[in-house]
Length: 348
Image 1 (cartoon, rainbow, N blue to C red):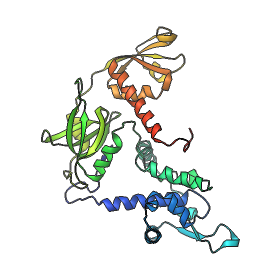
Image 2 (image 1 turned 135 degrees about the horizontal axis):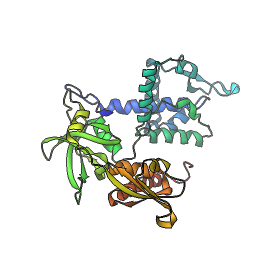
Image 3 (image 1 turned 135 degrees about the vertical axis):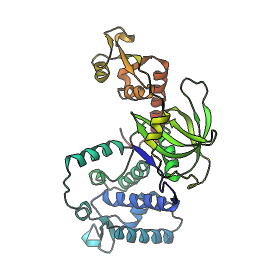
Image 4 (image 1 turned 90 degrees about the vertical axis):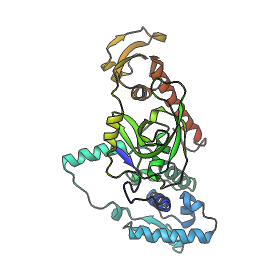
Protein backbone atom coordinates (compact mmCIF):
# COMPACT_ATOMS: atom_id res chain seq x y z
CA UNK A 1 0.00 0.00 0.00
CA UNK A 2 1.18 3.53 -0.77
CA UNK A 3 -0.06 6.86 0.63
CA UNK A 4 0.78 9.96 -1.38
CA UNK A 5 0.31 13.70 -1.16
CA UNK A 6 -2.78 15.45 -2.52
CA UNK A 7 -2.25 16.54 -6.09
CA UNK A 8 0.74 14.25 -6.64
CA UNK A 9 2.28 14.59 -10.08
CA UNK A 10 2.89 17.47 -12.46
CA UNK A 11 0.59 20.44 -12.07
CA UNK A 12 -0.87 19.30 -8.74
CA UNK A 13 -0.94 21.69 -5.80
CA UNK A 14 -2.10 21.37 -2.21
CA UNK A 15 -4.87 23.62 -0.96
CA UNK A 16 -4.41 23.99 2.81
CA UNK A 17 -7.75 25.77 3.26
CA UNK A 18 -9.53 22.93 1.45
CA UNK A 19 -8.03 20.38 3.85
CA UNK A 20 -9.13 22.41 6.89
CA UNK A 21 -12.61 22.82 5.48
CA UNK A 22 -12.90 19.11 4.67
CA UNK A 23 -11.93 18.21 8.23
CA UNK A 24 -14.47 20.69 9.62
CA UNK A 25 -17.27 19.32 7.44
CA UNK A 26 -16.40 15.75 8.38
CA UNK A 27 -16.43 16.66 12.08
CA UNK A 28 -19.81 18.30 11.60
CA UNK A 29 -21.24 15.17 9.95
CA UNK A 30 -19.86 13.01 12.77
CA UNK A 31 -21.40 15.36 15.31
CA UNK A 32 -24.84 15.32 13.66
CA UNK A 33 -24.77 11.55 13.18
CA UNK A 34 -23.58 10.77 16.69
CA UNK A 35 -26.98 11.20 18.35
CA UNK A 36 -30.60 10.56 17.41
CA UNK A 37 -31.88 13.85 18.83
CA UNK A 38 -31.73 17.31 17.29
CA UNK A 39 -28.68 19.38 18.30
CA UNK A 40 -29.00 23.09 18.96
CA UNK A 41 -26.52 25.49 17.36
CA UNK A 42 -24.77 26.20 20.64
CA UNK A 43 -24.27 22.46 21.22
CA UNK A 44 -22.82 22.07 17.73
CA UNK A 45 -20.54 25.06 18.25
CA UNK A 46 -19.12 23.58 21.46
CA UNK A 47 -18.71 20.11 19.94
CA UNK A 48 -16.99 20.85 16.61
CA UNK A 49 -13.41 22.06 17.33
CA UNK A 50 -13.24 24.51 14.42
CA UNK A 51 -16.49 26.21 15.49
CA UNK A 52 -15.24 26.62 19.04
CA UNK A 53 -12.37 28.69 17.62
CA UNK A 54 -14.72 31.32 16.13
CA UNK A 55 -14.10 34.66 17.82
CA UNK A 56 -17.67 35.98 17.57
CA UNK A 57 -21.23 34.69 17.25
CA UNK A 58 -21.48 36.35 13.84
CA UNK A 59 -18.39 34.51 12.56
CA UNK A 60 -19.78 31.20 13.75
CA UNK A 61 -23.20 31.86 12.21
CA UNK A 62 -21.66 32.67 8.82
CA UNK A 63 -19.42 29.60 8.87
CA UNK A 64 -22.20 27.29 10.03
CA UNK A 65 -24.65 28.54 7.37
CA UNK A 66 -22.04 28.01 4.64
CA UNK A 67 -21.25 24.52 5.94
CA UNK A 68 -24.93 23.53 6.04
CA UNK A 69 -25.36 24.60 2.41
CA UNK A 70 -22.21 22.74 1.41
CA UNK A 71 -23.30 19.51 3.10
CA UNK A 72 -26.69 19.69 1.40
CA UNK A 73 -24.95 20.28 -1.95
CA UNK A 74 -22.86 17.16 -1.27
CA UNK A 75 -26.03 15.16 -0.72
CA UNK A 76 -25.92 14.95 3.08
CA UNK A 77 -29.60 14.98 4.20
CA UNK A 78 -29.77 17.57 7.00
CA UNK A 79 -32.97 17.81 9.02
CA UNK A 80 -34.24 20.62 11.23
CA UNK A 81 -36.63 20.11 14.11
CA UNK A 82 -37.18 20.24 17.84
CA UNK A 83 -36.78 17.62 20.55
CA UNK A 84 -39.73 18.91 22.57
CA UNK A 85 -43.16 19.42 21.06
CA UNK A 86 -43.78 22.25 23.56
CA UNK A 87 -40.76 24.24 22.38
CA UNK A 88 -40.86 23.94 18.58
CA UNK A 89 -39.21 27.34 18.20
CA UNK A 90 -35.91 25.87 19.51
CA UNK A 91 -34.55 24.63 16.20
CA UNK A 92 -32.02 21.81 16.16
CA UNK A 93 -30.19 19.88 13.47
CA UNK A 94 -29.38 16.25 12.70
CA UNK A 95 -28.68 13.95 9.72
CA UNK A 96 -31.52 11.82 8.37
CA UNK A 97 -29.96 8.40 8.86
CA UNK A 98 -32.32 6.48 6.59
CA UNK A 99 -31.59 8.80 3.67
CA UNK A 100 -27.88 9.02 4.51
CA UNK A 101 -27.13 5.30 4.60
CA UNK A 102 -28.77 4.52 1.26
CA UNK A 103 -29.84 1.09 -0.05
CA UNK A 104 -28.02 -2.18 0.64
CA UNK A 105 -25.09 -2.84 -1.71
CA UNK A 106 -24.03 -6.29 -2.90
CA UNK A 107 -20.35 -7.02 -3.64
CA UNK A 108 -18.65 -9.73 -5.65
CA UNK A 109 -16.05 -11.94 -3.83
CA UNK A 110 -13.09 -10.10 -5.38
CA UNK A 111 -14.58 -6.74 -4.39
CA UNK A 112 -15.08 -7.96 -0.82
CA UNK A 113 -11.43 -9.03 -0.72
CA UNK A 114 -10.29 -5.53 -1.68
CA UNK A 115 -12.62 -3.95 0.89
CA UNK A 116 -11.30 -6.33 3.53
CA UNK A 117 -7.73 -5.24 2.85
CA UNK A 118 -8.77 -1.58 2.96
CA UNK A 119 -10.55 -2.05 6.28
CA UNK A 120 -7.36 -3.50 7.77
CA UNK A 121 -5.39 -0.45 6.64
CA UNK A 122 -7.73 2.39 7.64
CA UNK A 123 -7.81 1.93 11.41
CA UNK A 124 -5.95 4.74 13.15
CA UNK A 125 -4.86 8.37 12.47
CA UNK A 126 -5.22 12.11 12.41
CA UNK A 127 -8.99 12.68 12.55
CA UNK A 128 -9.40 10.52 15.65
CA UNK A 129 -8.62 13.26 18.19
CA UNK A 130 -11.04 15.95 16.92
CA UNK A 131 -13.88 13.46 16.51
CA UNK A 132 -13.30 11.96 19.95
CA UNK A 133 -13.30 15.42 21.54
CA UNK A 134 -16.57 16.24 19.80
CA UNK A 135 -18.26 13.11 21.18
CA UNK A 136 -16.92 13.81 24.66
CA UNK A 137 -18.37 17.32 24.56
CA UNK A 138 -21.75 15.93 23.52
CA UNK A 139 -21.68 13.57 26.50
CA UNK A 140 -20.80 16.52 28.74
CA UNK A 141 -23.95 18.24 27.47
CA UNK A 142 -26.02 15.26 28.59
CA UNK A 143 -26.35 13.82 25.07
CA UNK A 144 -25.52 10.14 24.83
CA UNK A 145 -23.68 9.54 21.52
CA UNK A 146 -24.68 6.62 19.34
CA UNK A 147 -21.27 5.28 18.28
CA UNK A 148 -22.76 2.71 15.90
CA UNK A 149 -24.06 5.46 13.63
CA UNK A 150 -20.60 6.76 12.70
CA UNK A 151 -18.85 3.45 12.06
CA UNK A 152 -17.03 3.68 8.74
CA UNK A 153 -16.94 7.49 8.56
CA UNK A 154 -13.57 8.23 10.09
CA UNK A 155 -10.51 7.08 8.14
CA UNK A 156 -7.60 5.83 10.24
CA UNK A 157 -4.36 4.06 9.48
CA UNK A 158 -3.23 1.30 11.80
CA UNK A 159 0.41 1.68 12.84
CA UNK A 160 2.30 1.93 16.11
CA UNK A 161 5.15 4.01 14.66
CA UNK A 162 5.30 7.37 16.50
CA UNK A 163 6.65 9.02 13.34
CA UNK A 164 3.78 7.88 11.14
CA UNK A 165 1.33 10.71 11.74
CA UNK A 166 3.74 13.67 11.27
CA UNK A 167 5.31 12.02 8.22
CA UNK A 168 1.91 11.27 6.74
CA UNK A 169 0.85 14.87 7.37
CA UNK A 170 3.97 16.09 5.54
CA UNK A 171 3.25 13.77 2.59
CA UNK A 172 -0.37 14.93 2.50
CA UNK A 173 0.63 18.60 2.68
CA UNK A 174 3.64 18.10 0.37
CA UNK A 175 5.87 19.78 2.93
CA UNK A 176 9.61 19.13 3.53
CA UNK A 177 10.65 17.73 6.92
CA UNK A 178 13.72 17.03 9.03
CA UNK A 179 14.32 14.24 11.53
CA UNK A 180 17.02 12.19 13.24
CA UNK A 181 17.52 8.77 11.68
CA UNK A 182 19.22 5.60 12.90
CA UNK A 183 20.74 3.49 10.13
CA UNK A 184 21.08 -0.25 10.58
CA UNK A 185 24.03 -1.06 12.85
CA UNK A 186 24.94 2.61 13.37
CA UNK A 187 25.43 4.47 16.63
CA UNK A 188 24.07 7.99 17.05
CA UNK A 189 21.15 9.09 14.81
CA UNK A 190 21.98 11.53 12.03
CA UNK A 191 19.89 14.49 10.95
CA UNK A 192 18.16 14.13 7.57
CA UNK A 193 16.29 16.65 5.42
CA UNK A 194 13.63 15.12 3.18
CA UNK A 195 11.08 16.15 0.58
CA UNK A 196 8.53 13.36 1.21
CA UNK A 197 6.65 11.92 -1.76
CA UNK A 198 4.77 8.94 -0.36
CA UNK A 199 4.47 6.33 2.38
CA UNK A 200 4.61 2.63 1.55
CA UNK A 201 3.86 -0.47 3.62
CA UNK A 202 6.06 -3.44 2.70
CA UNK A 203 6.24 -6.75 4.57
CA UNK A 204 4.73 -5.21 7.70
CA UNK A 205 7.05 -2.19 7.75
CA UNK A 206 6.33 1.45 6.85
CA UNK A 207 8.69 3.50 4.68
CA UNK A 208 8.70 7.08 3.44
CA UNK A 209 10.04 7.71 -0.07
CA UNK A 210 11.33 11.11 -1.12
CA UNK A 211 14.15 13.36 -2.19
CA UNK A 212 17.02 13.44 0.32
CA UNK A 213 18.33 17.01 0.26
CA UNK A 214 21.54 16.03 2.02
CA UNK A 215 22.48 13.52 -0.69
CA UNK A 216 20.65 15.04 -3.63
CA UNK A 217 19.00 11.72 -4.51
CA UNK A 218 15.93 9.56 -3.99
CA UNK A 219 16.04 7.75 -0.67
CA UNK A 220 13.82 5.45 1.40
CA UNK A 221 13.59 5.74 5.20
CA UNK A 222 12.01 3.22 7.55
CA UNK A 223 9.65 4.98 9.94
CA UNK A 224 10.62 2.77 12.87
CA UNK A 225 14.19 4.10 12.64
CA UNK A 226 13.17 7.74 12.93
CA UNK A 227 14.28 8.96 16.35
CA UNK A 228 12.54 11.82 18.11
CA UNK A 229 10.49 14.60 16.59
CA UNK A 230 9.64 15.02 12.89
CA UNK A 231 9.66 18.77 12.14
CA UNK A 232 8.43 20.64 9.03
CA UNK A 233 11.03 22.91 7.45
CA UNK A 234 9.03 24.49 4.66
CA UNK A 235 5.59 25.53 3.49
CA UNK A 236 2.67 23.32 2.35
CA UNK A 237 2.80 22.64 -1.38
CA UNK A 238 6.56 23.18 -1.56
CA UNK A 239 7.34 19.55 -2.48
CA UNK A 240 6.82 18.42 -6.08
CA UNK A 241 6.06 14.71 -6.48
CA UNK A 242 7.51 13.20 -9.70
CA UNK A 243 4.82 12.12 -12.13
CA UNK A 244 4.43 8.40 -12.76
CA UNK A 245 6.68 7.32 -9.89
CA UNK A 246 5.86 3.89 -8.39
CA UNK A 247 6.75 4.17 -4.71
CA UNK A 248 6.55 0.41 -4.14
CA UNK A 249 9.14 -0.19 -6.83
CA UNK A 250 11.38 2.41 -5.21
CA UNK A 251 11.14 0.67 -1.84
CA UNK A 252 11.75 -2.76 -3.39
CA UNK A 253 14.85 -1.46 -5.18
CA UNK A 254 16.37 0.56 -2.34
CA UNK A 255 15.57 -1.60 0.70
CA UNK A 256 17.99 -4.55 1.00
CA UNK A 257 16.58 -7.99 1.85
CA UNK A 258 16.73 -8.97 5.51
CA UNK A 259 18.59 -12.04 6.69
CA UNK A 260 16.71 -14.36 9.06
CA UNK A 261 17.99 -14.32 12.63
CA UNK A 262 16.80 -15.77 15.93
CA UNK A 263 15.43 -14.05 19.03
CA UNK A 264 15.22 -15.57 22.49
CA UNK A 265 12.01 -14.72 24.31
CA UNK A 266 10.48 -15.76 27.59
CA UNK A 267 6.75 -16.34 27.69
CA UNK A 268 4.36 -16.95 30.55
CA UNK A 269 2.95 -20.49 30.52
CA UNK A 270 0.02 -20.75 28.10
CA UNK A 271 0.72 -17.41 26.38
CA UNK A 272 2.38 -16.33 23.12
CA UNK A 273 0.85 -19.21 21.15
CA UNK A 274 1.50 -17.56 17.76
CA UNK A 275 5.19 -17.24 18.66
CA UNK A 276 5.36 -20.80 19.96
CA UNK A 277 3.92 -22.23 16.74
CA UNK A 278 6.86 -21.02 14.67
CA UNK A 279 9.52 -21.39 17.39
CA UNK A 280 12.60 -23.44 16.53
CA UNK A 281 13.12 -24.36 20.20
CA UNK A 282 11.06 -24.18 23.40
CA UNK A 283 12.44 -24.85 26.89
CA UNK A 284 9.69 -25.04 29.48
CA UNK A 285 10.47 -23.28 32.75
CA UNK A 286 14.00 -22.32 31.60
CA UNK A 287 13.41 -18.57 31.54
CA UNK A 288 13.35 -15.99 34.34
CA UNK A 289 10.60 -16.49 36.96
CA UNK A 290 10.08 -20.00 35.64
CA UNK A 291 8.66 -18.80 32.34
CA UNK A 292 9.25 -20.76 29.13
CA UNK A 293 12.22 -19.82 26.94
CA UNK A 294 11.19 -19.62 23.28
CA UNK A 295 13.56 -19.20 20.31
CA UNK A 296 11.84 -17.53 17.35
CA UNK A 297 13.28 -16.79 13.86
CA UNK A 298 12.76 -13.25 12.53
CA UNK A 299 13.83 -11.09 9.62
CA UNK A 300 13.15 -7.62 11.00
CA UNK A 301 13.53 -6.44 14.58
CA UNK A 302 10.72 -3.89 14.34
CA UNK A 303 8.21 -6.37 12.93
CA UNK A 304 8.96 -8.86 15.72
CA UNK A 305 8.83 -6.06 18.31
CA UNK A 306 5.39 -5.09 17.02
CA UNK A 307 4.18 -8.65 17.54
CA UNK A 308 5.78 -9.06 20.97
CA UNK A 309 4.28 -5.77 22.17
CA UNK A 310 0.84 -7.12 21.33
CA UNK A 311 1.22 -9.81 24.00
CA UNK A 312 1.63 -7.18 26.72
CA UNK A 313 3.27 -8.37 29.95
CA UNK A 314 3.09 -12.06 28.98
CA UNK A 315 6.12 -12.06 26.66
CA UNK A 316 9.58 -10.53 27.25
CA UNK A 317 12.62 -10.25 24.99
CA UNK A 318 15.90 -11.67 26.30
CA UNK A 319 18.00 -11.34 23.15
CA UNK A 320 18.94 -9.56 20.90
CA UNK A 321 19.04 -6.08 22.40
CA UNK A 322 17.85 -4.59 19.08
CA UNK A 323 14.46 -6.29 19.45
CA UNK A 324 14.24 -5.51 23.17
CA UNK A 325 14.96 -1.82 22.53
CA UNK A 326 12.32 -1.72 19.78
CA UNK A 327 9.72 -3.12 22.21
CA UNK A 328 10.69 -0.53 24.82
CA UNK A 329 10.28 2.29 22.25
CA UNK A 330 6.78 1.11 21.44
CA UNK A 331 5.75 0.82 25.07
CA UNK A 332 7.08 4.30 25.75
CA UNK A 333 5.14 5.61 22.75
CA UNK A 334 1.92 4.08 24.10
CA UNK A 335 2.64 5.57 27.52
CA UNK A 336 3.23 9.01 26.02
CA UNK A 337 -0.08 8.86 24.12
CA UNK A 338 -1.99 7.80 27.24
CA UNK A 339 -0.38 10.53 29.34
CA UNK A 340 -1.46 13.11 26.73
CA UNK A 341 -5.15 12.26 27.32
CA UNK A 342 -6.61 14.39 30.17
CA UNK A 343 -7.35 12.34 33.27
CA UNK A 344 -10.97 11.32 33.68
CA UNK A 345 -12.04 12.03 30.08
CA UNK A 346 -11.95 8.55 28.58
CA UNK A 347 -12.30 5.29 30.44
CA UNK A 348 -10.37 2.09 29.55
